[in-house]
Length: 399
Image (cartoon, rainbow, N blue to C red; front, side, top):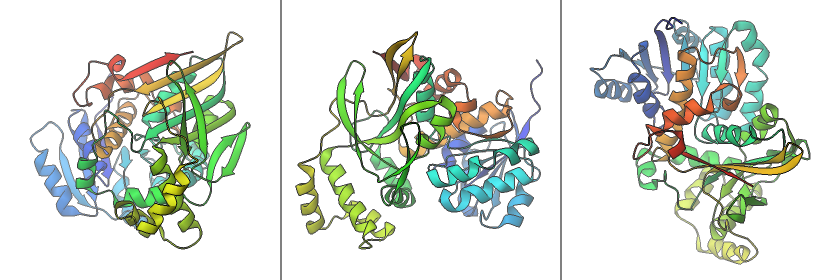
């Protein structure tokens, strides 16, 4: 089998916190004709290109405006693949994907908003007609979480329940809040507040459901026992039921201590009642008011904690050979810090598109088209410290 020709890649938002780790991984591949670091901050794009200069991949800094549809299409027209880390995705996800489809450019992103995920999935027929392969939500959660779900669900003949979980304030090998704060978390935190207020999409009793966030979900993880986690608005309950044929329930939950969950509930209530904007709620995470804290402490008494639940996992329950089974897949090693844990998976997804392993036109969730074994084998090289393969990155637990 002949190797595919070298291709041109545009990294939209490539000099940002999430984009830069993806650019670093792609620049090291050696099979890219040109890697365009397209960012609204041209100085940052030039600094990143200078830092990575000298390798086998030509790097081109480019001043990009993701809100300008004409310039966006001009940028994409000569590219084979665009990776998108610009946000917020509820504003920019759909327009950027539309530009990629219009220019017949393959696409991958890190979208973690469930609302635009639905809109982007609705562009599947247009992408297929254009011959465009688009993988959406290929970061940490969604992304790595979807690949964990694929490992767990594939051991079952039928999947009744499929849940994904990520850590908030519990110990986790990939956690590095100091590093994250250095690159800036404000946009991500505002997004988080949005997904903790109003209503969110889950999958309940075999169909889509609108529910309030921060509902308590008790899960029984194989070999560890029961614990309680709390729902958050995320794309996994939108995409996993489509790819895994979930017959009953699917949620995305946060593994979080009771007092933190109680404080998040207080912020949620104040947002929903118009007492706080999303930005004010995000700021209140770092500088909580005494009165709000007091309300949270009172609410905390009725909340359960995570018990022995892992920090980052997928949990599938269903049947195999006519008997009930529960399968858990948990992450035991990760790139350090939220920026690298999100950007590096995007580069790995892009790699499977670039080398022709994924060549299925349409708009897809990661677990619909990516090879999970290869994904975790490659992720192992980027964990801190690097691991030798997927067996040192993921543990699969059975009951």
